[in-house]
Length: 324
Image (cartoon, rainbow, N blue to C red; front, side, top):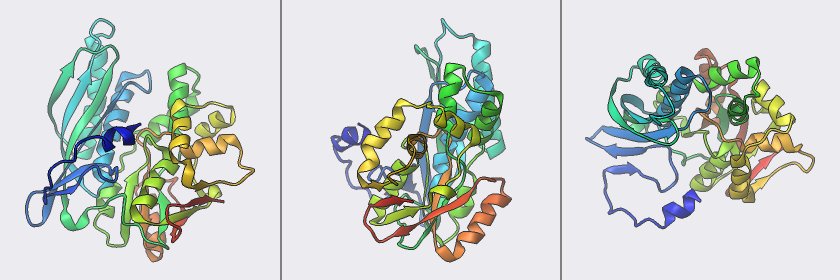
């Protein structure tokens, strides 16, 4: 649906300074401001994924800043986006949402310099984030090369955990796992942007692993082979998937992106669902020179991304994603 909406929009006038727009579904817009630097701009907001207002704020802010890191940039400024149903939620509750977002931004070294609020039917929170990036460090969701290693920075499963949180069926262990991964900033992306051996990068969010990988492959003119057993899964998320928990977006992702995907015939439906699970504040997906893969993976681990793993490699098969 999103692709259909965008393809009907009138194309903007050509602008040589607009280095990254929405042509390939990239994570953020990038606009050149001088000979060496560019500005990164993005926005993301959503309704609560957990009941705790403070943790909701933390998750939403982490998710919004991730798009800046995914293009190799560093966020420098944020504006809060607030929708508050004033007849349903107390101001004290929303103060906690704002406090959670502010805590994440402070940890990232990003001032929240203002924002906008409206009265809405449901609570909404997120950020418009501005970042900076050296032009030579810009990473896109295109540019992957055949033979590149694919590294995933966190485990999959936040979609199922968020669904369980909304329904009140999430376990204590599952809740802890959700908060831990969904508030882990992808700030390693700014450092990866400085590496020439990183050829493409994106963060895995609403389209799930296979959806965002499909964009990388189609935009780069390559394919991918994934090692099913190497893909990290959140333990509690896997338990929910195995128990039959699902999300509507999982099915929509499968319908939108399965054309180029080749899965094992005997793959259990729960595992299939995990690969299309929409992620909240999900992991970075990195395509890098295979000779640098072990070093980059070690960097992930040293920075606290314990679940990070090499999950496969890129191939010359245009847009075909094979999972085995």
